[in-house]
Amino acid sequence: MCRNIKLLFNFEPPVTAGEIDAASLQFVRKISGFNQPSAANREAFDAAVRDIAAVAGTLLASLRTQAPPRNRDVEAEKARARAATRYSRA
Image (spheres, rainbow, N blue to C red):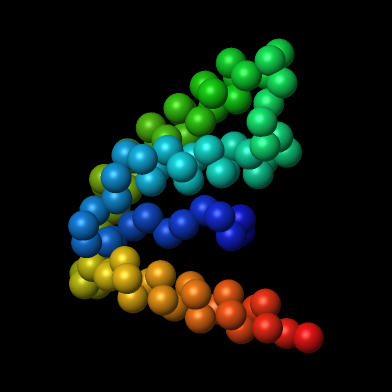
């Protein structure tokens, strides 16, 4: 999985539209291989980001869980600890 795509489900406060858009952009970049598409591909690229964001928003709104909401600060600290371990290897 792309490391830049963040987990978005079951957080307090809930995910924002901006976070869904950012994850959708990262997903389209990953599968297309383009960080910035050419002018010829811009319309298709942007449409894909919008479509994926819409589907992702629908998915997140319809998911249910019994687990308590995650804390963003705790999850960010866990991610920093994983990164420190990953990048400290010699």
